Image (cartoon, rainbow, N blue to C red; front, side, top):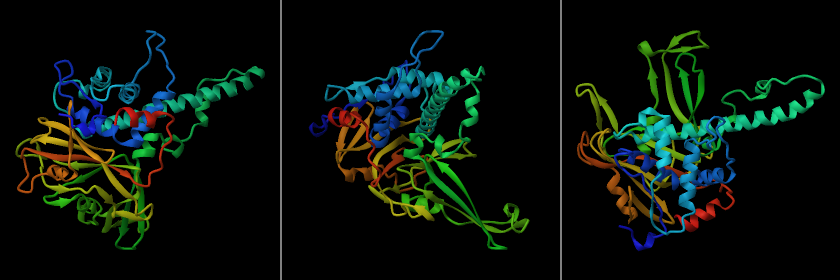
Length: 390
């Protein structure tokens, strides 16, 4: 059922037919990403700037997951109908072809798919960026070297590339989703503190019964004592000593994706079971487990989308999505969309009683957008979305 107040919604639908299998894990993630404004606008911008390239052998237009997703978002954004459905056959077909894990009819993990999609898009963008840079260098250096009678090796420009992992290699996936964790270790013998940074696209946090997401994040950054066989080798002392270790956030991302670790492997049962614990998450979130030198320490986030797992096990169940659009909260269940009261979001916190191996509709992935995030300028893209699809 579609409420009259939200007739401007255009639904993304992955048809759960025999041809495609159970794809609601994919459906829910892409629905959530579509309502993550910075991601949607960058995808539409990519579509506008996309240059067609063709395979030399087949003569067909080259395609990958990113081009298929860009086409899908473009089709939604430019739809003239106010309501309707889209079955993205090309995207599903390409996904199954590129990764055998998703090439079956079983339910897959939405978090694994999110990780795969973001990393694949980032790799594609990095490859395209490197190819453009190489082509530019070949043109520039080729003209210069031809005059001197020297043939330029097509691999020579690689020497001018930045080292892997440098900031110049960052794509807009990193600009939107990437944050940085700093791992701080203090030797209890000499009090020397060492730190090591690690980038992330999402944070996976353990869940506890009747806890809040803020509490889960605090536990994530709790001080841990390294002792016994786990003693820390201190380079200053040149020997192993007891130490205290903790992980804190050094760089807060523009889009914060939080994965609630609801599936736990139980050896006695020889399988994963679901932790349907009640975990409260607010519409507004401020992180407190940040390092002393973090930029935007008081950054405030607004909840914009939630991927919800329905069921009692990871391999059996269903995924639905909650999204915020124009100050309305909407519930997507494949080809059905309903307007819901913000208070109803509490229904997806989880179960307040013993929540192990219990059937529940509980939040699995939370998407928060920084309130101070710089508005990304997308010529035409953002306007098209606002007018025709949200």
